[in-house]
Length: 155
Image 1 (spheres, helix red, strand yellow):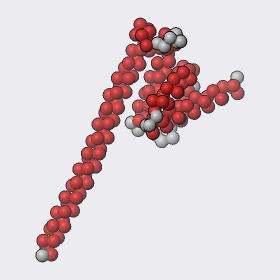
Image 2 (cartoon, one colour; image 1 turned 45 degrees about the horizontal axis):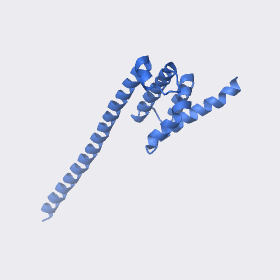
Image 3 (tube, helix red, strand yellow; image 1 turned 90 degrees about the vertical axis):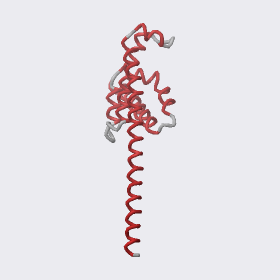
Image 4 (cartoon, helix red, strand yellow; image 1 turned 180 degrees about the horizontal axis):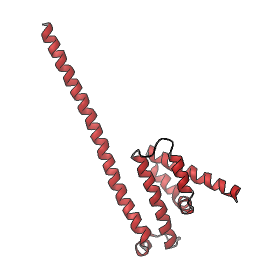
């Protein structure tokens, strides 16, 4: 009886271990699929931004009435840079604590600051409910505000 109990216990342990490993594998596969989906969607967005920021005829179709087409194309190019950083951050390629540095580098660019002044609120609305996107948006907003506060002192 003792041998039978030991065999049953060992079999149960192997079954439990297999189930745990299988569940972990399924979670990992789901995470990787979500990352692949995110990359595919980002690629589409970046391709669209590339076309819009380089083709005035195409950009004209989407340009808000109160913005010049050339200015809009420049703003879309800034958005492309921000989207690239966002994707890198979402995929874990921005080390912890480095996001404020990268955001500050982006906001050193006049066109990125102009983009943020015009569309930063829209990006904040888009980020609502997505904790990581909200954090990303807050960091960029702080960098933009820090740069604008530093400008008068430097002048």
